Length: 197
Ligand SMILES: [Zn+2]
Image (cartoon, rainbow, N blue to C red; front, side, top):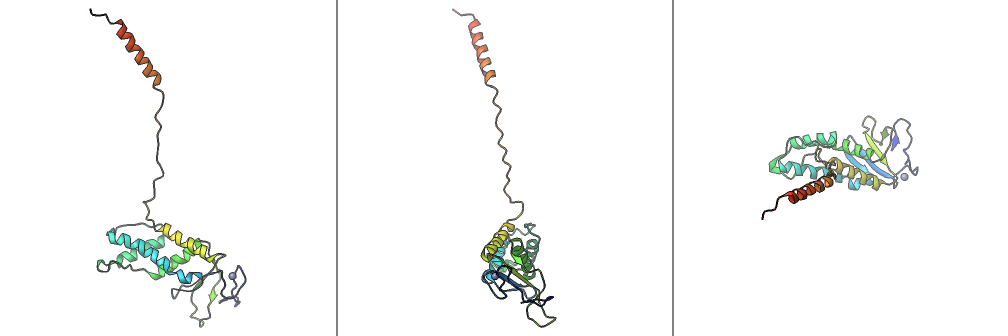
């Protein structure tokens, strides 16, 4: 792959390699919507699977009203999934792939994936060059795991967060003297009572 502007081969920012190396995290084609290489290639389906799982749980419950996720792109995916959900095919979720790919690119960025900043010429015919997002990382597996964990976090619906406020009010301890006084008065009363004989 080359930089479209400079024409120079793109190098790995970690080892300087111009081809595949162990730092290659993902080659994502944003026009054809596919991951064509890198560490993420074998695990790319995990993103979709996570989203489908979370959505299906909600859809099966019939809770079609507003579920707000922690991410605008997830909200878009959710709306699309709801609009296309059918009870007859209750185990499948429709995923808008364009939005899914935008979300994955965002997740890899947020997880410290090192994205190539320039425009990439992937060797296609001029005018047909696709929008490639190229990611490297010192440890591709760690970044990928982080991205998946981040997605899982975003898939916790809003409003379900644990309430951290657990006010434990301590009772005021200053009544002991009062109690003792009252006991003394009672004893005095009893003593002053005339005896019946
Ligand atoms: Zn490298």
